Image (cartoon, rainbow, N blue to C red; front, side, top):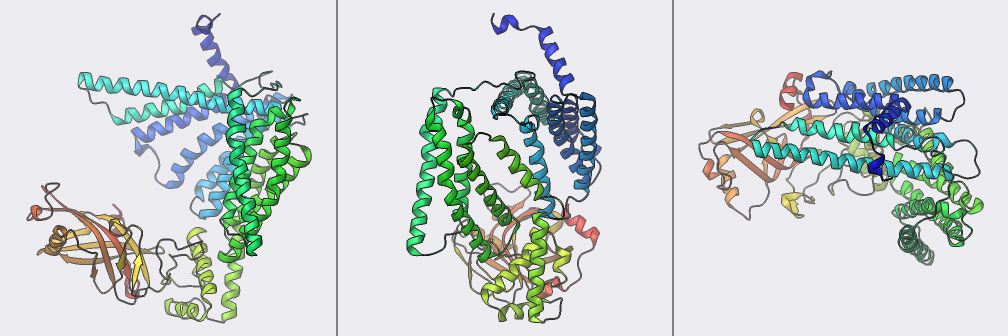
Length: 613
């Protein structure tokens, strides 16, 4: 009997009812998330003001839906369903308050909260694959089959939902074209949400196996296409990585030098590739007629293990050269985890692989939460190191710009760069403004950070800008050398914005630009003037070079601009706009600040809101 003969509306209704009974909380949270997204499209005033409340509404429902799915699948394995439901409710209540706390402290610490949230979401999503299979078993075939079904189910439901969405939106477009109707773009966005969120989730849940199908113990044989993909494509690519890295090891041994820090990413990619291959061939390890795959798994792990030493030396060198940061700490932790995985795979011949996923997400989660988390430990380490540096110098804190500049000039160049980098990392990456102000006052600029592996955007000192040239990547639409303005500048900032009506004035053939800038939590503005005639001369000169405006507080180096006036033809240049009303002015360049730019009174709060509009 074909599938068309088997299909009936009653059967489809029964299947839909079964999904609702099996995953009620998941569907409830998905429906709530769908409604919130649609209300965000159709009525933005519905949402309370503030990033925290909006974050809570957009973050909690989808994560709670995934958590509910994982707990539903886990509760099916429990003998006492009543206790498992009570535990399910308790976990959801705890997660609600966790999300509430995360939303209230969303901007308290950029890295610490970001990494903690990422680790928690990773744990929740991954638990769908392993939470139902934590009981000790002879092998992980059941979990492997279930995981493959989940992945293919998600792919199929997404494709079907996408085709449905495309068909409906094409129909609406046709109605608009044929009958001259004007359908709101909000309706198109609403259809995207309904199809790709609600219907997609429903189709996915309908495909999740249950009962005996959920615990399928069949050891599937990989088809010919799968074997060709793994053995003829992925395994040779992995071999190329191994060969390249072993040749590099021989090269650095002959040259007797330390490995480059970038080798970390090659070893990491090779490790991920090995785990991917082992996951794909896992069922073949239980076929007696597939000895190649058994040897492949064991010897791959044996060949990768020595190269992890290369990764260890590389990350330690990067830490030594550029300092300790949160990403480098996590790469080092990942490196240690890789040692354990490779050793197990070689000794136990990959009998169980589910623990690899479980251990990865648990290590990530444990290292990202609590007072012992890596971000907090990094902050305490850097704080202690900066305290020690200033204690050795015996200077009185906090330092102003002149004293800090004098101090760094007396230090070794590398040590001075590391100090500036640590301060910059604490302030901008870890959000520790209040901590940095105990060492430095607000006029010391730390925006250019040598703590990283190279210059952020320009090849210049972070606190003192000397006359000369800079090679700015986006300068004047090409990578060319630009003459820097002369002056005792303490800070530089890129400018790339539209100067609209409230920030732009034209009087007596002069153009006045009001440019906002910021220092910590304070807001300032500085005004530049330029004759409109000069802009016209530059506009018609194809070979014109960047030019400088100076107002005493700062110098504005402009390498690209665009003036728009009402009634101006698109291709007729500025001369055609003579006498027309000024609309806006786009300026691209770099602004160089003198110390006096930060010594004046900041703008009032209501003025700041006016500028931001």
